[in-house]
Length: 445
Image (tube, rainbow, N blue to C red; front, side, top):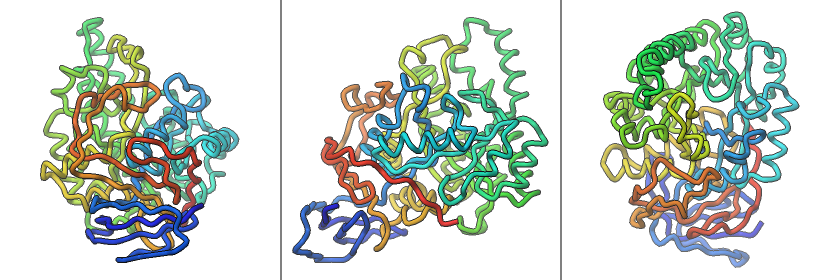
């Protein structure tokens, strides 16, 4: 690896903005300070006072490989991620076949080792009949255990009470849950099918996958975690109703129960179904406007710990089907940082909070070794952002294999200009510099 010197950057890191240079050597941050020089540097980048951030860590994505590669691959979606400043991802097990054995999990790591541009980890999947296999997972090399406590895309519902008790009682590592009560969702589905039949539209989605379904399931997960002192991380909180379940009285590193909010639950609300329809159909559903306001407040007061995407691409043709047939999920991993920086421009939060929730907090929550901060000796996962260079989302610059975005036509106020992954400059000024592979995450557990 060549040595790189970044000069004249406005570093946003650990709650401060400072003017600094950064020397990268051998994949790591070798030195931080003003006026740095090194005669052996092969590459110098003048940041010209633009923002330098730690790389974004997205703790929830669906990259669809293996088995669903007509929608996406690890290669295509990791490229999209890097172009948006996401240097690290954690991917979910509901691929085909589901990652329910150690062998199938290893297969996904092997694909990523050959094709991922970004750093990576993969969740081990839980089912109603693989508890022994789940408990063989190595906490130092795998990000966590994924439990679908409500069915979503795929067929990995865990609804056996004995299995759930066993997971929460015996798992030595983080359990990440999708929480929607299956019985509530099924009852609502039958009700609205009878009422609307073929006339149903995506506007019904938040009524079918409603607040009651979310709260009932999240409450069960939190109660199980408290009963067994399990390490629980509740994914994609979407309602104001659930926020009382989460604590902000202790620092993140001391929490046994943490929660994530996704960018689409902060950005969209139920009024957007009128124009976007199935494009924003996702599980849990995007709900009424007051929920996104409550979620933003909880993000700011630390009841919600992490911002993620739940990137879940489907083909355009799949999304054009009827409401009942169209799959749930939005492609988002290319734009989460720019979405949050638009909120900064609107005065809803500050850039230091964006970095804390998208970079520092995922590293702390998952105990990722050597990433998530700009520190000497840490991996050089870095992003340069120009806050004065607008960028419009167009079909030509959307990099997902599915080729579309629910943000099409939106103009962001900022742009990602450079992305470093594990010390390698992989993206610069709208071009990929290299397909250098990312690194598998290690966990300090």
